[in-house]
Image (cartoon, rainbow, N blue to C red):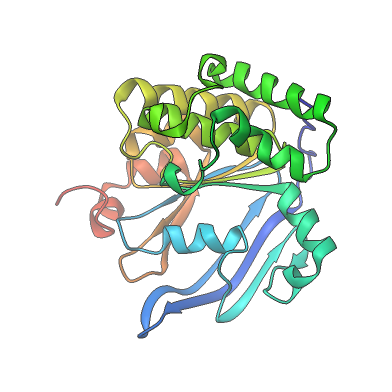
Length: 257
């Protein structure tokens, strides 16, 4: 893989949100007046019960949804539907940000795992030799070389998740957005995904992970944003202090009363 650049000591914001609101059709609120900053090289989790707005927010960070009010910036520039209509700006953004969906079936779609991992690098215009090197490198990194010639239907849930992550890593983005990366996986596969996230933390990648699985949080992130069931930001802080606040976790329905 290409050399990974480590974050600067005075890390600028990768994302900045100011009073962001979003509602789905029918007036179903997903986010209400959310403001937060995520710095370059930071590893953060978005915590909250199902339906609190985590997935909506992470889709916004990937430019799949856009605020209906408020302001969203990525890499110091407004991230809007209009800004991404510019093909050059869109290409720059897509090279810097990778998104791993909760449902791997929405992401792994090619005839074989090899073709799926090669999809992104091919669209970057890399030579066939460079593409093959990317595929080889990320497959080795994730321990899935033996899966490269298998079709998606021949893969387990954990294997398919690794292929989805490999396809994103093959583009070598600066930022990785992950929506419930361990959901529905067996314990061994969950452990493998957590180990990979730890490795990416050490490489200086910016990680934004939406989850309600409190067990993995201390291992994958240094800061947490906690969302209430009213779709607002209930708290933010270092993960140890957030996880120690049982009253907060009960209030947002992350632990039982």
